[in-house]
Length: 67
Image 1 (cartoon, one colour):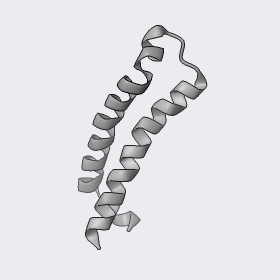
Image 2 (cartoon, rainbow, N blue to C red):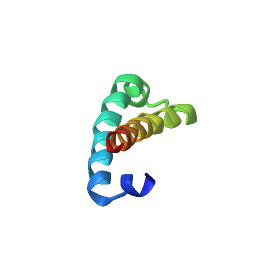
Image 3 (cartoon, one colour):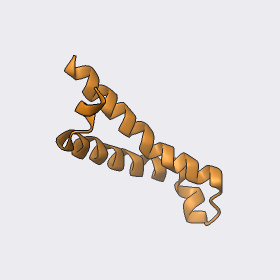
Image 4 (tube, rainbow, N blue to C red):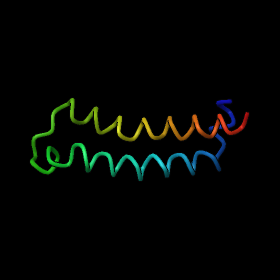
C-alpha cells in the first residue's frame, strides 16, 4: 500500500493538497502568532502538523479508494 501512495502521480496530488490545506490551516490557527512575531517551538510544531495531517489524510483516502 505504501508503494502505491509514493508513486509520483499520487505524491504530486497529495503534496499539493497538503500544501494548500496546510497554508490555510496555518493562517487560520497560527496567523496571529506568526504575524505578531512571537512564535514558540510549540507554534512551529503546530504549523508542521497543519501540513502533515492533510498529507496523511489524503494518502489514507487514496489508499482506501484502492481497495
